[in-house]
Length: 429
Image 1 (tube, one colour):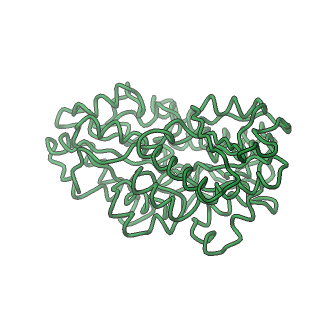
Image 2: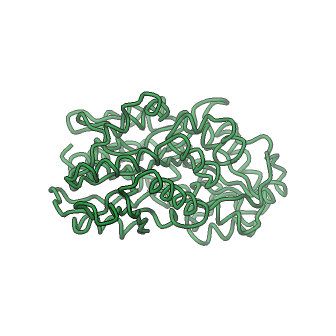
Image 3: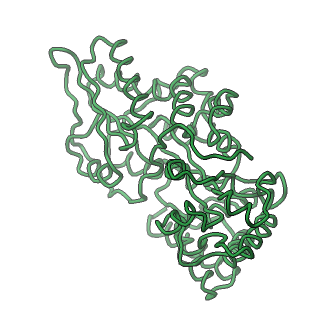
């Protein structure tokens, strides 16, 4: 396994916080209307990191090329928004942009709250449409319309401190072929006198959800008559595995806490489960590390964890010419050429399968190589664009009680299913 101390690329922010949008159609206008004397002025709200570093350079290049190709465009303004600003501004319905980047989690709420632009025309070319992962294309295609451009994907990875592993006698070249092997490695690190890992039960769904994704083939995700189709027995192995990992955890650390991150960077923590967005921090610290997918249960088996996605959405203005320009801009963002550049130069995986399987992409970015493999399986975080229920969040309470010994794995599985059903009931789904 390659040792990594520095790589190019600023990593873009991953998911928008999972905050539900209130129902009801927001009819506030975007920056729409007819063109000015020099053409249309378009506004796109983007994640803050989309205007920084390599990501910002690529977006600026895209904008300049788009303006050169469209004489009726005067300007395209990329307005950075953090997660809270994005959601609050979209909720207000006032001064909406022409397009915006946002989490796929909230896609159904955006459709209910905003007059989203139907992008069906963008996908009329099969050469264009067939490049996306089929699951992503299916997600944005709802009720005879296509409501977003699939853009970024992210999966959990396990960061490994190579200095800690060497001290413990763990050979990083062996990877983590199974959960049994992972537990053996954790035990060796623990025996060496270094914290093996952070708590996998004390921070919501992320770490235990990554384990659950390894059993996705055996979990019947769905909803019928307002209740989940998942059976508690299908989840018992997940909670048994999480409980076994927790034996070697420093329970005062959560995976995304400053103390865990600093411990990892200072060679006091062996393994940290996280997302691609954390890598820039490790790059800059000079720590020797690598990262691998969460392990499968059987060697060569299912892995990939829980997949999260981000989309680009358009806002309908009622002006056909303006809407056609927004569609064309979003089409370029979804293009093979742009998403390939993004993956190579920014280092974040995208939702075009043809890009993620491109040998040039795989060889250019270790994160892309790992993500390409993980995206072939694993589990979606939720039924994007069709449901407002982020059902993995119901894992937080039972897994916390599992960590403190108040619940057995079997009891935690039952509580998890009960929690999922409560979420569906509250959402009326």
